[in-house]
Image (tube, rainbow, N blue to C red):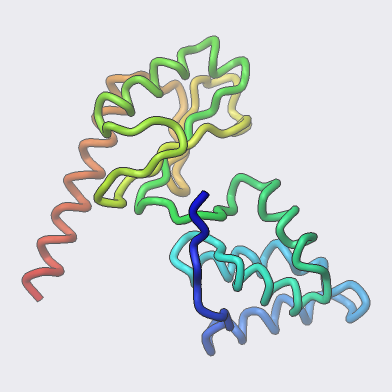
Length: 179
């Protein structure tokens, strides 16, 4: 197992202000209630994942042991304990989605992106994950890409979305190189 090392973590000035606002919403004896929004804030500052120093810093800020913060971060699928691509493709695999074709969606991703569940493309643009229940069972199968939900998904539609995202990302990359 590879351990990703990161430098010590502290919130930047803007996020420190936000953290203080979150903490002020709770009585001092219950500041651990701010854990989830603070983890989200740290993850956004860290580029979409929570390295151990960020977890340690947030745990210390709310006065809980590191392992308690890790338990929360590893429980919720919105938190990532390793880097993810620019586009995080999450395919629901619970029973309604599975019965409606989520396996076909994984195959489409594998064919289009060349990665399997839990992997990230070499260019770090796409990560494919299996997720438990996205809460739209009536419109299964469901895929979430970053913050956008796609219901009644078909392999064809998913491939078209992935192609569009790859093209948008390539356009952004070429614009950055010209600057």
